[in-house]
Amino acid sequence: MSTKKKKYFKSNGDGVSTPTRGFLLKWYDGTTCTIKYDGPFFNKKDANDLLLTYLKNGVCSWVVEYHD
Image 1: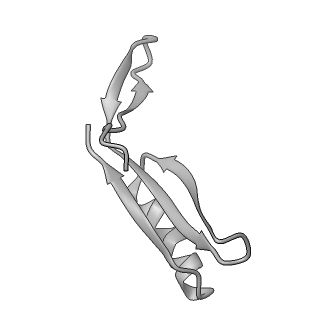
Image 2 (image 1 turned 135 degrees about the vertical axis):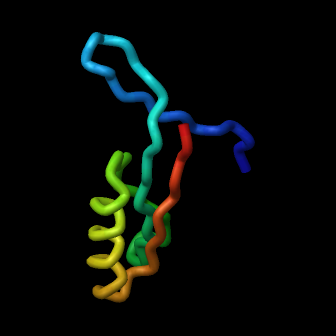
């Protein structure tokens, strides 16, 4: 297991990247027996809305939050 911490950066409009909070949606794909992901999302509501869609369809899924 990797011990590196991921950091996500977003442009502040002046061409400078600043650390920001991000969210990844991960889910288990039973057909290929792999974990897949979507994102990063910078809005928690967007990640949670997609999470609910997966859960309603019976797909094992979760959101991972990365802090700045």
